[in-house]
Image (tube, rainbow, N blue to C red; front, side, top):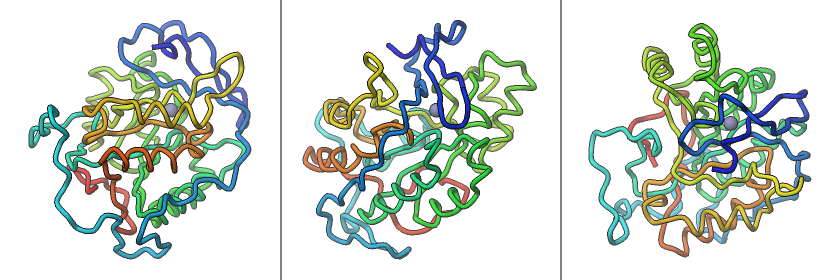
Length: 287
Ligand SMILES: [Zn+2]
């Protein structure tokens, strides 16, 4: 994976840069890197994709009616009951969960604007916030939950957990956003992190589709169109009970409306927004 050779170095609250990671580079799994492009100009974004039932209330609107969960596409096995798959975060609904990570650095209100747009489309997403920022703006997490979105723990300061001492790793995990879903930075964790999370009552939640929205080519952030295409072109296995990874600082938020349109055109449904949620995320996910 291209980004496995990079890790993030915090420069200040408004700027992050990708830098070679050294020890972090050997992890065998897809890793995210939080590479802050200049904060993307916020376009008044994401028009609802023509969905019926768009609403701003905290009510019980569900975008696709109350039908049975979608069947897996041909060739995709039904998820085994009772098995927790950390890449699917307990998503056994058949639907797709969109997730948004990190923070929107110079634009702390961006998450709640994105949250309102998704809510208006009847979509429930999950936000994994870096707590050193989120703790300064507690209304962000509370508003997101009020909008019907889950808010998860993405540690205190987004360090590479397996490279830390026992105490450091514990502090990073335990000091994160209160809740029971943990997304380790770069998706990387070891047995130790699994134990720390389990002791704290947290489940690890990674993803099946990485939009690579953090990637830069010759200094340019990945475009919304390219981000959108990476979801559209993912495999049925990745989409059914799928979890999509993107970031609050990238062009991913601008791509969300198109991602939703494409997935629906391919016969997939989004995790449904059924109104305000609490800090605890159910397992299996209530999608
Ligand atoms: Zn992250």
